[in-house]
Image (cartoon, rainbow, N blue to C red; front, side, top):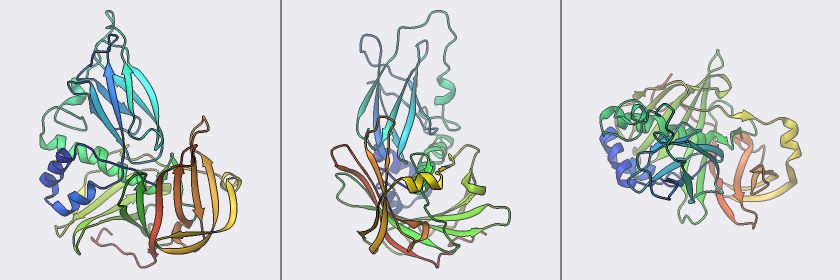
Length: 346
């Protein structure tokens, strides 16, 4: 249920959302979602930029380098991600980034000399205006693919997953909700997102709700998502933007990566202190402090404050670097038990 920052290319994404949904207030709020950004610079063996290279991320995101060999990729979840860079007739380059430790960095991918005796890597098939490709013309299929394939899944990852793991320390009961203030280091204002467990179905599927508040009542965005059993995948999604009528959103297979569950032994082994006081916007709580290393190299620490007094059991989470600097934090700003569908999803 955790988070990240910065949708660069602001004007581009604003234009997309206005074209698709026509809600300027919601668009403004979306620009504040704390996604994490990494810049990828693609060069040849003489350090000359390679334009039109495909940058693919293990979370399904794709981007194409510009004339300066630059592309930006964004992440909505903490953790390690593999990045592969492809260009026609060149050897691919693969590296990994870890969020939020690599936030704001520029990663250079140096592609080897052209290969004379190999098949071309077909970039154009993935860069057209249709489907989930990135780049090419600004047709309706491209716009819808851009939003559906990248923005929403990143938001779901930020609210339900951290480093690939399910961090719901306790189960939500139907109707229970939590609201979160999400902030990256250096951000003056927090982003607010609310999530709620609406209902469980007989087949094990679950309806969840995410609310992105607007500046005024009846503004903002409501998303209601039907997850498969154990959140293995997203099966259906409905949305309302501002005062518009609710709409069905197309959902494809592989749109969302299911979180892995930590063992009870792993959770208990991570307890650093018990019965500590933690202050968050929702109030003061007595909680257990849990700590995990966030990379295989031992860099950075992920901290959780666990309390049985709130839905999901999580009160606060933060990532700190080896110098103790807080890179990212998520704090509980409210909770309750009266959530219900706002757009008649079931």
